[in-house]
Image (cartoon, rainbow, N blue to C red):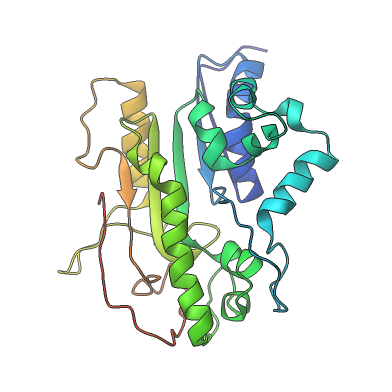
Length: 263
């Protein structure tokens, strides 16, 4: 078999995390001259909250579930050797988490993620309103999130951004980020945009962002698009003004601040 000149590894959800964990190995195994990763919806933060008696309580103590995944499968040895060496003894399993593993990935990464990940809100946070909305259109009528659930979702978004901050701060195209504030787990190639303005002009689609980024990592002389390769939509509340891409919800408490970064 002739070794490929270029390989782009991608996957969604668990496949997104797997992309981060294995992109270097896949490129090496194939003998590729160049390899890059596009993990989608695979940035799962550390989350130790106890389980609640809600419909979506599937993986509420997520950190423990990830630890069990590594431990029960005796998979520590498959994780990055450099990452494992940097951890305390007995905590090598942390290299299974995207926030810990990403700095040790040699391949360029285009991380494609939602600040309010639909799966995480239902399975980690155990909020019924997220569980009641479908992942893909046609959307169901807007579920009503209780005041407690609304506050929890807003706070979770803030917490998620704290874990994502090192990626946002990473310089250059080696670590690109496309972050939406839609409640999504599985990204829409056709209708999703980041960076819409007050005049109603649409921002950048994920495929345009990817193409700009991919050309840049292949051509060191490519110009920065003006955002340091970070298309970041950091709204304090989930975005719902793009009905083709963003599912509707009814929030039981207001949070009026608005803002974007890097768009």
